[in-house]
Image (cartoon, rainbow, N blue to C red; front, side, top):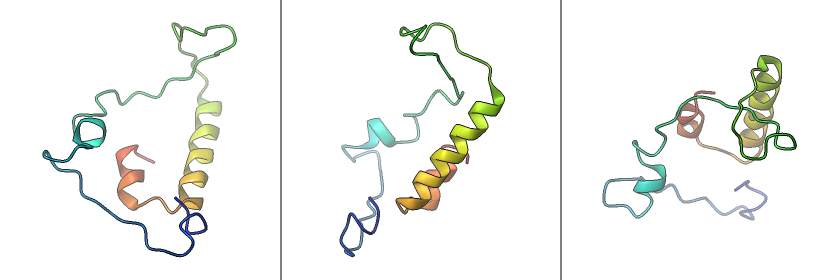
Length: 83
């Protein structure tokens, strides 16, 4: 949520612990896959054949970084996805 979306109110930062309801989705074991994959959803809607396009992957990573920065993502969010 960007500061504009929060209307100037501070955004809560809640730790994800084993007892947290969010642990299964966002805890340390939730992101078991760490590979980046790109798919051509028009020609491969079932996502059966990943594409190897490093230039597009870099471009998408930069776009994600810019969106995260624009929305005040915390440092741990960048670390979690290694950007």
